Length: 134
Image (cartoon, rainbow, N blue to C red; front, side, top):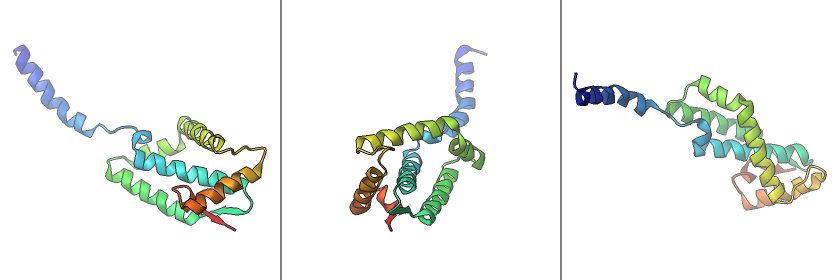
């Protein structure tokens, strides 16, 4: 078989595999970002006694994210691996702690979580929608 025919045949055989290639879920921003917002809101509600998390809303959104990921071609096994990955948890924690620090939040001062949480609620931000003042 000539080199050109072989190349053409290989191209045809790899085309379906390339079409099925999906980026890692961490690169699917509409999923990764929403999980990040939920994680920040959860951290705020854990450390601020005057703010609670809207957990049922977060759970509903997470089910929607799972459905969206499934529609994008990710299996439940792939989704679970992403959500349970220690590497991804560490990445998300580092990203979240940087956001908190950028907004003056420290773990030594629980009130700083409350200040940020109230500001997020007031702005009705992507984080604030998952929080409720008690």
